[in-house]
Length: 210
Image (cartoon, rainbow, N blue to C red; front, side, top):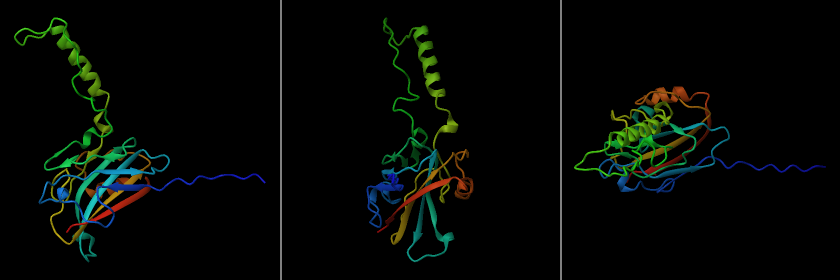
């Protein structure tokens, strides 16, 4: 009899700078530094094309979903991305749109002028070359292919940490078979609706707000 070895794929799993069920570090509270925590994941399901991250809070003992708040909503995260660095979003700013881009993507290329510059004057030909290369690099990563943030419960499109002690904050990551193709600033309901039929896997982590 021919034995067939089947290797089970590891499930989608989330990691952060806190353990599941442990206390949320102070830096990520709304009344402290108010910045997003570092998050990473492994075990992407086969055929994953994008990810969605939804971060909600709920009061202790609350069963009413209307009482929950959405603190962060990120969608169309490129399939190549497996981590979100600390301080990626929050405190009124965000670098989410650069997820999946190389460190130097969209930045001005280094084009050396062999004649140097005199009193701030730059050779027009060198400047034209810089502009041409810059434009090509920037256009190579279309906006529709970038990760986007939706509107949270506080009217913003970046991470907003919880303040209320006794609540919990849950990070839910979804692996999808396609992109949502929604505009920036989409509502939680719009994101959930667009995810229908695309979810391949889910992982979550919950932190206590002490």
